[in-house]
Length: 261
Ligand code: NAD
Image 1 (cartoon, helix red, strand yellow):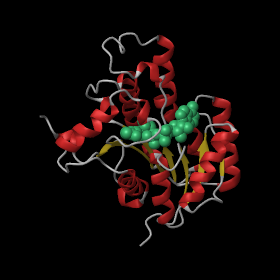
Image 2 (cartoon, rainbow, N blue to C red):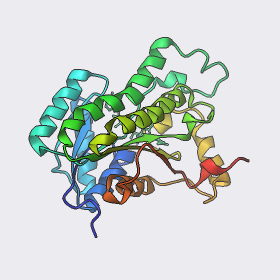
Image 3 (tube, helix red, strand yellow):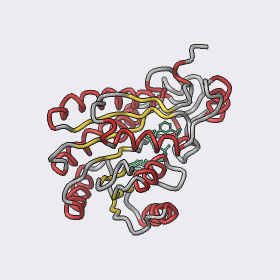
Image 4 (cartoon, rainbow, N blue to C red):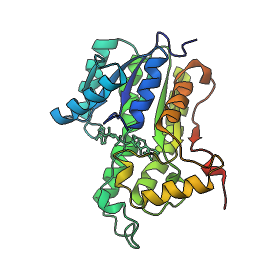
């Protein structure tokens, strides 16, 4: 059985073949979905994303620029997506940004976070979920599924994650409020809280190697999670198998979040 047969969706956040969004896309396509992609504007990014899509075996998929920090860019992107797809069944928000100068493990690094860095991190990484869901809603007349990617630093202090932890807390709360708001339209909104995975964004976080090593020692499964495993949970949430699930944060972290010591 193909879980997403006949479904169409938009995936935001593929940068390369390490991206969590790329793993999600691979599984969606494998399960029969037709996917369209949004990427940061610029030729270099377009080439990179195109190459990743080719490696995934869907090099001819539709893609267009979408900077989630810019309302005009979001509007243009979803207008083009509507022209291409008419309606969609799902939306994947797999993106985040914070100035890496403030993602260091040094004492005082979090306290020194400037207002604009805090605002920028929350804008791109959390507010954008509202903006893109709002833009996608008219394309989901019969309902749909939206997912966003979070991390455990939303709820516990992970040294170095700093302002991104604050943005992820906002993202998870945003997903809950959104799920309540759009529930009557049969649109579901959930977060996946993934364990650390080696991607471009993860490498900007101070102390990331320590996180990998700690998780592999302490997590019940005694290892770090793979992007591929996040992709499989994403398919579940985007499919009808999860028709009764909304407003949740689901951990795909080899069980690390349940451990106290
Ligand atoms: P990644 O670097 O591959 O992807 C991040 C994406 O965000 C990139 O495609 C980038 O272009 C996009 N982006 C940044 N600013 C943007 C903007 N203004 N408009 C549009 N796109 C923008 O890294 P990733 O690890 O795959 O990150 C995907 C998501 O997963 C993020 O939300 C991240 O916080 C989350 N996450 C990552 C990990 C991890 O350890 N890698 C763990 C848990 C959650």
